[in-house]
Image (cartoon, rainbow, N blue to C red):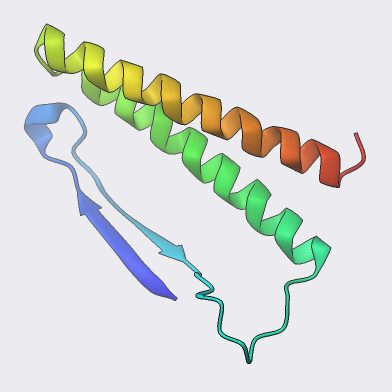
Length: 96
């Protein structure tokens, strides 16, 4: 596991620090495959995490010039489409 720490500058209207821990598997042949329950739990966690970041990015767009804000919002739309695909995987794993 490794820790990501980000500081957001006050001038961008987002003046708090937050840390996120992420576990990453790098395909070591000595590792067992994760159970379906573990995969589902990780996907649900990551989906919520991603959605939170999309909200933060949209908030940051308000502090940018128009062109940069439009580009950032377009990136968030792309990010959101990816999240929707992850949500579909979660639904299928849950048998919904």
